[in-house]
Image 1 (cartoon, rainbow, N blue to C red):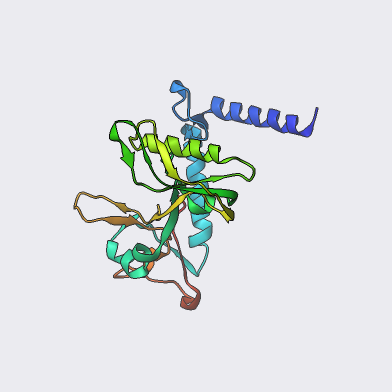
Image 2 (cartoon, rainbow, N blue to C red):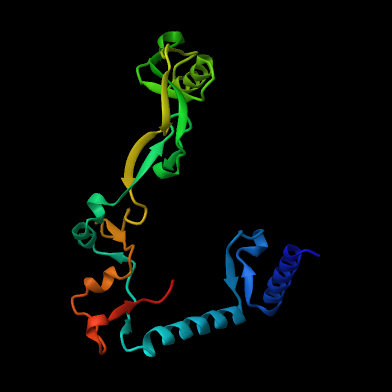
Length: 233
């Protein structure tokens, strides 16, 4: 028996034991479960609490240079305005005009090929579109393949049996991203609506909290090296 099979068998036995003894259960198990999500049973909840308490005792109570702090996730919007998160912290996003899907720009692979630029399209019953559209095709592909994609795009814009205009000559490009870039707020800094109509933001770094306390908790000895910890999520 190979090592991989032994490891798999051991893991299955361990999971089975944990479920029988009430340590963990798969989340929403009676409805088929959700992969990667688990609920803690009676013994599992006690084990989790013991591990957390042990970590907390080792990191705060048994050290002279660390104290604890448990802060809220939602904070005043002026904090993120002052730190620059609101105005400068963004994740560049890229939109595919054909599929309407959005991707992070750094997750789109660089591509090379021939780009065909279409200036619009005309169709039956007087339908038309003046929206420009560009198609990147791999090297060696004919213009007809780009034309087929352009027709699908203009059909989605309401043009019946479209005939795209332009795109007679392809332009050679290398290492480019064939999507339309846009910039949207970072998911961690995105505004969340609250009961008071004012937008608020979830804090990314936990250490940000103690800088904003009007009255900071007293530090222990060694103030030059004091550090703040918050309990793990």
